[in-house]
Structure formats: structure tokens, C-alpha cells
Length: 537
Ligand SMILES: [Zn+2]
Ligand SMILES: [Zn+2]
Image (cartoon, rainbow, N blue to C red):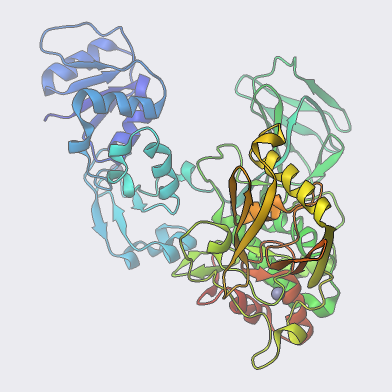
């Protein structure tokens, strides 16, 4: 095999093929004669999207029909069987030279500290000197390709870290930049600031004067995405809401607004929303919250399934309200823990947290699939040798213990309506009359893990989070799945504890621990066992 020549119509493909170790000469030149000559001289096959190349004798050409990278890889695989040619992590995507593996210590000053800390294997290009490492998000890149090209996934398990675009960007001082989806599916917006705003799109750059208002509707001829940056220190105000950092607006049929902001500023808009305004005496709990929120965010940076943003500004991820007043305790908590995240085996953890565990945190498998996670197991949320009911750290929570009572008739009506909605059926005739329900409980976490409803026509099984959905009143989910349910004469009584999924850090528990003198590190290690707190920037 003589390798390939890729012309400028497939530049991105060239880089990817080199990442996979395929021998590629990239010719960034429009002149077809030059490429043909090179092909004749070297016996290499040309890969192009341009039909301009002549079918000359002795020149092998692969004409790709699509401009979509993954489809290009797929097309190539079908024509030449890429599978056999792939040796990832072997070739410099910049200059095509075979890479050599280097000792970690040798490249210490050449890579960002976080990368140095978290990565084990490094390679270097002997020609251009560029250093490569296995990217932390390679799994997501893999996932993206997997859907289209199953056969390649194993081979793509190592993607060099040069694909910086795929990973997160940072500020000059190395703080990660977070892309937060702050408004979505809006049909128009106006933008203003006390300073001049610079706007830029692919098609043109422009500026908006101080205090001028720039109004955009869906008829706008601007090419999106458009990015807006304030020239001074004043925030950009979009639809009346102030945002620090930069704003990028994407358009599908409607507009999505993404706020690009450094991690530490982002956290100051998150921490008070997530744990509330706490008094100074509970600072350690707020610090624990800051580290958990930072860890959660870092773990969710640049996931491939969300190309425009990393995190939603809602409970779906973490509530971010930069325009709301923050408080000195939250600011101090973020500053005091600058750059710190929770790690397990050297990598940031999936830092789940929720309001009140009710005395025992849940196991990750109670709500999310079957795979156990070492640091998301049930924790007894009370001091050792004490009774959980009386001494749980989260006992001060208003939802530490709760009760719901219904008449049998009310309860069955609610259950039926919820089952219909979850199963998307419009008539209750397919549901039938409810005969009984059966709960299955995880004895360690005390959570209801399956809830089965038996009717005279059917059986309905609910697991994990959907249990709280099927038992919801109106739009409010049942507080938690830490409950028992019983029938007494003509009533149904649900006795429950806690609020939220209960997995990971218990926020009210953290507050309780801070009140009696635990430090934020002790708090975090109590909820996330076997982990470390590390400074990553
Ligand atoms: Zn190189
Ligand atoms: Zn708790």
C-alpha cells in the first residue's frame, strides 16, 4: 500500500486519517495538475471531493460524495477497507511523521498541568516536536463514530490530545471555559451593554454602540452563529438579563443563546442557586457545594452529543443565574476552593448531589442503570454509633420526613392518569382497573427500586426515577423514592424521607456537618468514598 494524497476539499478528513495512523500526504493546493503529477510519481491514491481531476491512466482516485466527515470515513471504509490500515496514536496529524512514545517527565512543561496530572501516555513527533496524549473525552468521540461506523470504534480508542477542539478551551490562565445554554428556542432577542459590543459572524464583523440596542428577529439575514463580546467590563444584557463573559447565539429555526464564561465565574452564578444563601457558619458546606459543582461541570465539558454547549442553566444540569445577586459566602467558597475537583483514580468524578437523602444516600444503580460506581454507593448519613432517625446530618431539612395521604379512589385515579401519561395512551380502557401494586426495595439504600402496578388487563413496571413520576401529584414528582406505601381501610398512606434522587452529596447533610464543625474535605469524602480532592488548575 502506497498511502494516499488528500486534497484541500477534504482537509478535516486528512487530519482524522492521520490520527488513525493512515499514511497521508495533504496537498493544500487547488492545482489539479500538481496533485496528479504527485500521484503518478508516488503511486499514491488521491482522495478528493472535486470532480475536476481527470481520469488519467495510472492515477487512482477515490471521489467522495459527502462533505460530512463521518460519512466520508464510512465511504472510504466501504471502498478500501479502512479497518486494516488503522494504527491509532502512531502518526503526527500535523506532519505525517511516525510518533515516538516519550517518558512523562520529559514533557512536563510542554502540556497543561491538568493534562500532565491526568494522562499517563504521551507521544511526541520527532519532526515538529508536537506532544500528543490520550484525550479525556475520547470516549465521547468514540461514541459519535460508533453510531455510524461500528467497526472502527475499537481502533479509535486512543485519540491524541492534539484535537484540542474536541476538549475544553481555557482562559489564558488555564481556567476552563464553560459553555452554558442560558436561553433556548427564543424567536427574537435584543442585546445591549453600557460598553461597546463587538459582534462577529462568518459573514461580517460589526459593533453595537454604548447603550444602543440591537434587535434581532427570525427574519434576520445575519449568518449564525454570531458571537458578542463586550469591549469593557460591563456585562452584555440579552433580553434584559446580564451575562458575564461572551455570548454566542445559534440559530436553528429559533435562537439558542450560549454564555461562554470561565469556570470560576460560572460557579459564582451556580453555588447560591444550588445550596441557597447560607450563613457564614456554614461556609464549609458551601465550599463542598462549590467543589461538587466544579467537578460536575468539568466532567460535562465538551461532550459530543451537545455540540454548542456543555451545560444547561437549569436543574437538568446546575441552575445558573448570573444576573441574580450572589452573596459573600458563595464567592468566598468558590475562591477558597479555586481549581479544586473531586477525583477517583486520577479523574474527575460524576459528582451527583441532591437536596436531602433522608438518612441514607441512594446507590447510583437505584436510579441509573446497572453499573455500580465505587464512589456513588449508599452512605449512612449520620455520625457513627448514633441512630439515623434522630441524628442524621440532614435532619434539619424540611423534607427529612414526610407523609402523603389519599383516599383509595383519589390515589387510583392519580395512578391511572400518570400511567396513561407515561405510556402515552389516551384512553384508560387499555389500562384496566387497578388491582394491586408491589414495591421492591434496595435493603441498603432503603429506596423503592421497582414499582409494579397490576390491573385486570395488564401489568406496569416502573423503575428508578419513573417511580417518582408515576406517583406524582399534578406536576410535582414524589419527593423521593425513599418511602413505604400502605393501605389502611379506605386510605393510602405514603411515608417517606428525603427529597431528590439522594445519590452522592446530601446538601442538607453537608449543611448539618458544617454546623458541627466538619471541613469541606471531610464532607466531600463522607459522601464520595475513596475519592481525593485535587487542584487541577
Ligand atoms: Zn509532526
Ligand atoms: Zn442526608
